[in-house]
Length: 134
Image: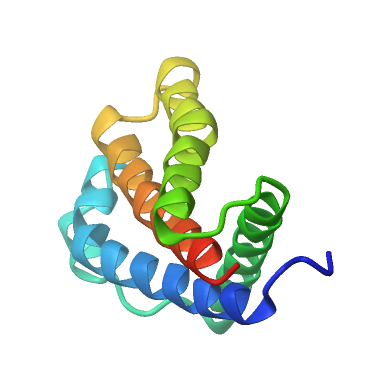
C-alpha cells in the first residue's frame, strides 16, 4: 500500500463524511417517512450517537483507502480519471447493490434513490481526490 497517498485518503474521509452528513440532513425526514415512521419521528432526526459517527468515519476510511488503492493500481493521475473511477465504482457496486435491495428486499425505490445519490456524490469526490493527488 506504499503507492497510496495517505493525505488524499485523509481528505477523502473528511469529504465523504461531510457530503453524507449534509445529504442526510437534507433528506433525513423523507427517509423516516419512506420507512413508514411517524410525523414525530420524522421531525426528530437529531444528531447520531458518537458510536455511529465513529463507525461512519471508519466506513469512509475503508472507502477512501480502496478507491485510492485502485487509483494507484490503475495509474489514475488526474481528477478526471479519478472522477471516472468513482463513477464506474458507483455504477458497478453501489447502484447494483441498491437496485438489488429494491428488487429483492422491497426497499422503497425513493429510499434507495436517496442512498444511491449519496454514494454517487461520495464516490465521485473520493475518486477526484484520489486521482488528483496521485
